[in-house]
Image (cartoon, rainbow, N blue to C red):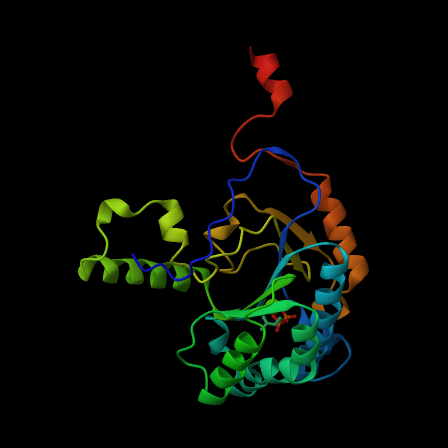
Length: 258
Ligand code: IPE
Ligand code: MG
């Protein structure tokens, strides 16, 4: 059966105190409000958001995080005004033009997850170039969700599995959670330990719906363009204070229940 990625799935999470997350995911939100507060056009908020991304990638690597997945553009963001969509579409080029050389040298593997259909051929070429240049890196994994939607990705995965069945390469009974996850855009990444959303909004907005099953959620009152190392540290401290049980109970409570 041809799964999307041959990387073995991450090991099953174990209950216990959360310490350092392996995989951090962030909804980069609040660019528009940041700009509005300064009387600036929203586009400038998005450009400042790219600067925050640069700071946060460095800060995450310094904090021994191995995987960082950021939400850049959702399948629903197409409904914004055309000029704003155009600005958002220009951001990957802006980011990679300034940073891809450094990411490549520093051992970062870049993957852009989301639907390629709908993106301009030039943007697809820029994305593929960034992925190819960093394909052999394995020190730090940066996933950029762009034209991504959790529901779209689940539907796409279901369609790909159905195609395997239709082609006679898989049987319906082959499908379990592990096999299904191998068809998702995030195949090969462990699930996020923590999903951070700045800007004060408290929702997932169609980000990593399947993968979020046991993620801790951290909401922070800072707009994304202001985000940096200190905010990431605060989010990690909040995460470290959580008690992760994955539906089980902790050892002390097993004794108490006995
Ligand atoms: C995040 O900032 C960027 C994207 C979602 C594309 P927003 O543009 O959502 O900023 P707010 O929420 O309007 O402040
Ligand atoms: Mg927003």
